[in-house]
Figure 1 (cartoon, rainbow over the protein chains, first blue to last red):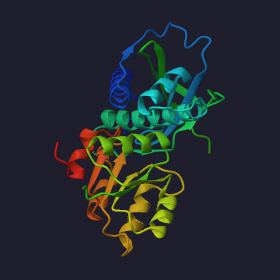
Figure 2: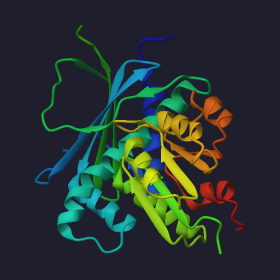
Figure 3: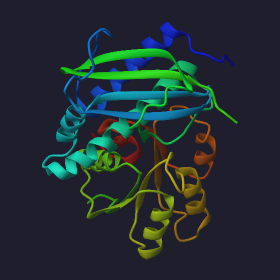
Length: 157
Length: 126
């Protein structure tokens, strides 16, 4: 088993997974964007992270605007109160991450790979010390940025 | 009238539960009631309180009690053994599938769930 990702292959698969998940879940178009552009200036950003245990110890994190999450909720639910929408935005991001992670690992490692994921969680404070970013993909989802970062994880025992 | 009138949806994500509920309805089913549980423990609680459940749609990756453990317990109990189960999972070709199939799980549906993916397992004509 390899202990790291092939960057180009991983980036392409990650991009494809983000596009297909957002299209299937929310009928939204996600297109590659330039990494030079600033991420959500003056907008509230939500971050979610999931640890992958096998086949490779790593972590997938996504970041996007709360506005995009709330737009997805508007598509999934019809009439939602603002307070409920606020709370559901976080859950929606976690579920999107869970599905992207599963699809990415299935596509990258192929049939027969044993995949074990932790539960996705929201990230409020970045802990970059134990992470080594291998792949970063920035997408434009109908005018909103969607950043995905795949990192290898150095576990401390 | 559909064979499935009381459907239990087990998933820790409210978003995911709502998507599944919508997809079932978009398949043309009109159940009398959807029951929601956040994990296997909650689902077993609902099943101990009502015998009306005639279909279970459960996620695998959940806190407290995951879908695999839940299905094993379900299929070991006389009262719940015969209830049809559909599993939803974000992982394709997972290692749990052979065991779940042996336990009599109807289908494993890959997330995100869509009406197109549910019509087959639900036995609905398009």
